[in-house]
Image 1 (cartoon, rainbow over the protein chains, first blue to last red):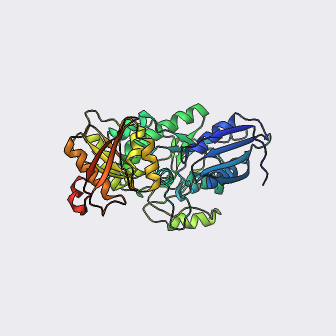
Image 2 (tube, each protein chain N blue to C red):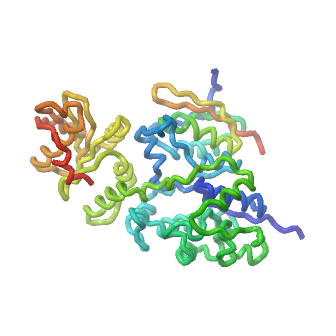
Image 3 (tube, each protein chain N blue to C red):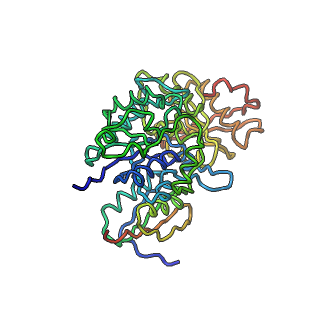
Length: 81
Length: 351
């Protein structure tokens, strides 16, 4: 699956639940509407945490993939409220 | 004049009770809700993920607060409070510990003080939680709940929607800002009433009770936690030490020396990351665990630690195993030892 080019890339490798999502929330606060964040990490729970967080915050979860022990997840920030 | 919308700050663990309390405050009382979840650094989910442990079905333990946020359609802000101030509270609790290393009263006072600061900064009316009167032996007794409220500076501003009718009315109830008649009178350890309420409020996806997510209530963790505090002059513990306490088998070799042996590949990886300033101990020619030694061991203690490390590696049946001791980037010292054949020979050192 083709992934969009990220506006912001956040590497949380070496940290575990809930730190990757805490950092994601901080990063997204500084982004504009409809921008793309790429989250990279080693916490296998990112695959379930990121879509759950997106659902509760109304950001768009674009998918996750795992390769060589790294999880990469994409989020598109929600539009103007 | 139109009644203003009350603003309520919720402390949400992600368990059923906190989910119900958020539903009641937001949907039944009609409040504007800001929901937060405090990360303390003693999270079992975090440790399991860090050390590569999975559930029986192979899945990773989910973060309950995030799952709850998704189910409720409400953002749960995760806030890191695992700072030095919080760790000082845990190491020196004014109101003592529960059955293990859980100073629930002091922990709650600290959390509620932080919640009060957030509430005031936000301009909110009250804090709410999913606490149920009489549900937990220490922190949810009537007098303890009042004590926590007072010490946190939240007297009259802390609402427990599930038990509110059994507790004195909050300021928001007294002033008519929220309707006390819409609140509940649940008490005790049962879940029947909460399950009925979940159905009534349309909650379908919620976690089963599983003893919480706090390592401080774990008996084995508590032994290691107190061992650290009991072997130092000042009752202080760092965030990095907390991570180490939740990793591996721990052995107290003497007042000055401790050995930690990895149990899984994930734990070995974590121990490698924490090797700075400690001895890294490992079997040289066979596969085996990574171990760390804190302190300056005597020759006898080095031999003892080496025999334990050799016991947990693939050379356990060999006559001799070469065990390397390396500190930082230095050249390793190597000891040839006979692995322990019988665990009872070193069991007394296990913490």
